[in-house]
Image (tube, rainbow over the protein chains, first blue to last red):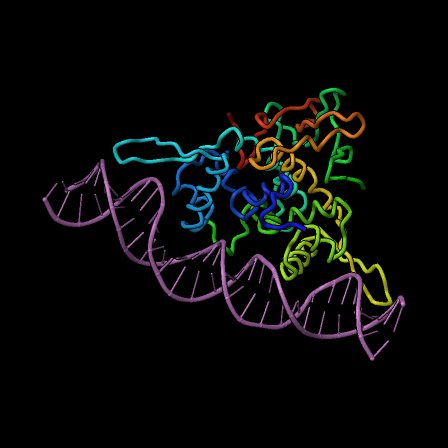
Length: 147
Length: 147
DNA sequence: GAGACTGAGTTCGAAATCCGAACTCAGTAG
DNA sequence: CTACTGAGTTCGGATTTCGAACTCAGTCTC
């Protein structure tokens, strides 16, 4: 029911862009301040040709931008756009899940509320009710969370 | 700096499991109530051998469980475990991002706060401060969000 | 001004993964 | 006896991924 010509739902499109082993890690590296080709390469251990292709794709979809930072030997670096930064909730959710459920390497808590240092809790916020709530109270077309 | 023998951070491990085009969509399908092989197949348009391998991997990592639901012709179905359900915040974050930034198919709002119907806002919650806050106030080892 | 170095990529061939289409296999229904 | 269902498996070909080595412009060191 899902021909390749058809657009599919928005999330399918999104996962076609960031749904691979590297893209999310590239965004995470970007959040950690990494911007240059060789630094991405060293940090992630990604193969260079794959990095080239991923960076191009993330630029194409508006998650990174390629910025000239020096002229004489002309050099470019990659910075997160607003859309790229907006992926941080998804990234945080994944990091949290990893900490709780990943079988490898029981890691310590690595995400905290900066002002007070308390371990982070993720929630949703309803502007009109002025309350936070968990995923159980989310209702959506194509996503009905129960149990 | 990231040999394949080494464990890497928890999120790298996690993305090795769910970081592909299909796994997250399988979880989403699970949340929509899909449980059977052919239904996953039809719903996602995934190739059967790939589906076989993904289901096995998700079972192996505790995200799905394979449950016998009938005896005479013995048949199994796949259900989300607690860990699988716990991926919903990440999924919701991705759906939200998709709605806001994905270039394809300007979709309507599909995620709302069930009790009141208001469009969903995502945030973090600090138990000790009793406040919600955005990703800017998150500080973490290996994840420093600024800007 | 010769040689080493830097940053951002390309090129290469081997290995792994993905794909659709067709097949299997046990059991049921007509 | 034939058709159908559900959950896969098998096949060969196309695509993607990999590490290692190479390129290329400019700069730095002696």
